[in-house]
Length: 210
Ligand code: B12
Image (cartoon, rainbow, N blue to C red):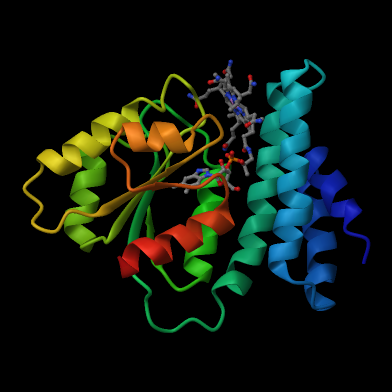
């Protein structure tokens, strides 16, 4: 199976084509992590670079995002197969004002695939929504995502709200998203940062054990 066809399908926003190629790859036993990391994420990086250099526009991004999400939905059951007991409970969301959810959903799927119970709050999530979800689900970890330099600062408010809340067991806080850095995570009082979904799983495991 030539998976560059999948790369091209995501890049050009062709959902049906992406699904067809992925189904064949699954049937041939290709590792879903390879499909995601080596082709799908790479295609999103390329469309992002084209957008940044003025060679692609918002409709192109939306088409690619739609293809990425559709194919990811197809792969999701394969990521979660074989896990029985929960490794811990995680509440995840993209912070208030921010509608980017591809990376966040990728992180959520990987965490689920590695045995965590994941409550995905979606996008544009307020500090109150994060705190209430932690309370309701007894979450061990809160994961926040932001893709805009204007919204990443809201993470500070969420970490502060968690600390100021009456939650007896305060959850650990993990942050991520393209504009973030390790230094920013430390500055806002988060317990950890990762630049990618695989790193997010390693970090979550470490924080649960700590
Ligand atoms: C796709 C996209 C969109 C799509 C989003 C579709 C969707 N459903 O998500 C649409 C078209 C809607 C969009 C809208 C906008 N966008 Co936009 N978008 C992008 C783009 C091209 C790709 C983002 C993406 O999906 N990357 C692929 C994923 C897999 O990567 P990722 O998100 O970084 O996630 C990975 C890691 O960061 C990490 N991670 C992510 N979250 C978390 C969380 C945790 C806890 C952890 C541990 C790790 C982690 O793991 C992920 C997997 O490896 C980026 C460019 C870029 N290079 O990032 C611009 C970009 C983020 N957008 C940008 C802008 C400006 C906008 C708009 C304001 C445009 C406009 N004028 O309307 C709006 C804002 C809307 C809003 N309020 O949010 C700018 C931000 C600039 C800035 N400095 O803030 C960027 C950087 C493009 C640019 N250079 O101009 N966008």
